[in-house]
Length: 271
View 1 (cartoon, rainbow, N blue to C red):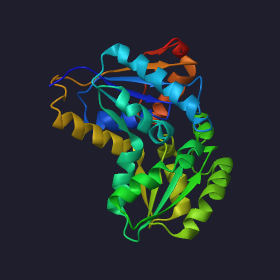
View 2 (cartoon, rainbow, N blue to C red; view 1 turned 45 degrees about the vertical axis):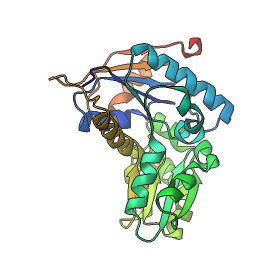
View 3 (cartoon, helix red, strand yellow; view 1 turned 90 degrees about the vertical axis):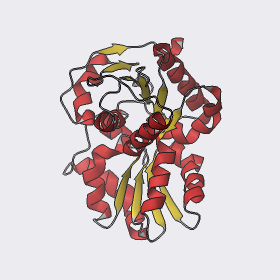
């Protein structure tokens, strides 16, 4: 057993959907969460900038003597994880590979849709990963650059005319193509599930990349015998690089429960 905390980071607040899933299946684990809210979104940045931000985020989390890191950012998982994974001596669990594995298992017609940030789509990482697990599957990838800022500003509910219009523009070509699985390639997107499902239809299975990463974390901690041995509910510490008040106000909608945690601001450029 290993009672050290698990680190989780994202470019903003969306990674809390992964935290929610970790607490659901690993309720005794302590979590240190960092949301780089001062530099969100990562999806429109160059790969060099994403790598710089990723290394800073990891250096900050490692000050807490963590035992594993969940990279709850689809952009980092696709555009940077292959480069930096060999730089650290602890497990780095990305959302992309976990989602690709799940999609390969679910698809029956061998057509898999993918939505993500511009950087995630540009990387081609999902195509490479999916081909490892389902070589005959086709994938249609669509960048959705407005989804993250909309969700970060609380605009994600079905019936919101702006969200519905943006989602329809992004998703209609995918729906017409006819996948039976759609990967939500960003941890912000589960909040848009109702809107996305309404457009794609009931015959399309939605894969939550954050939830799949949480399941992968459970497997890794079990195999390495690093599950927490505490007989109490896990706790979380939250850190951001911008407004503490904004994070505290919006955290509940991502966690799916009342938020009472303490949030601290970090000067991430110092790491």
